[in-house]
Image (cartoon, rainbow, N blue to C red; front, side, top):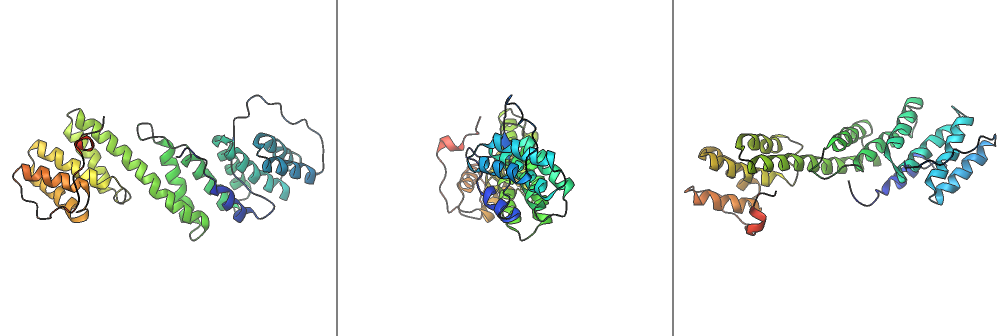
Length: 282
């Protein structure tokens, strides 16, 4: 979702897995050879992995935590090692492996106090992979579903609070995608298709709180005016003026309706955008 790595996962990990275990993700390990099998005390394997983690040697840390899990399956050390792998994979940008490790933890320890962290990290790994609105939004949709699941399962926790914030961010992203498609159809002289996309933003309660709602209403005023549907244009202009009287988009709608001989009842309190901002982005 952003260029910088989402760092609060570490802080939340400390809350979730206690002083003995963090948690998160990893990246591309390339063709590095696996750690040679050698029976060693579990404490030694775990502590060496932890030291590698503190040194930000994510792939090396994963090797040691995998050995803990392999040599001491179903143990308390194995549980902690899986959480550590989630964290190391995440930090190394290997989101798929992080999600797989989280799924493994949830399957093995569904009632464990650290299960909320595993669910949270699955959502965050998808959140980190959200791309711009010009591309497929599969990760955004997967992230939204995961974040909602966290908020529903663990209300009042730090994970749920952060998930709620990110839900709004993802909804803004998905609404932006609808707007991008609507503008494309509008530029392509397909007004009915454009209307459907703009209305998707207006009618979706989750999207109504996003930053795209005022523009969606303005674009509906534009398209309905183009089609000669004055009543619809006025109705959407009124909704825009009532809810966003200070928005530049209402100032634009007011100017457009006035040019068409209409008399909107709400006076705009904001300023119109420059002509460069008023054109339909291409």
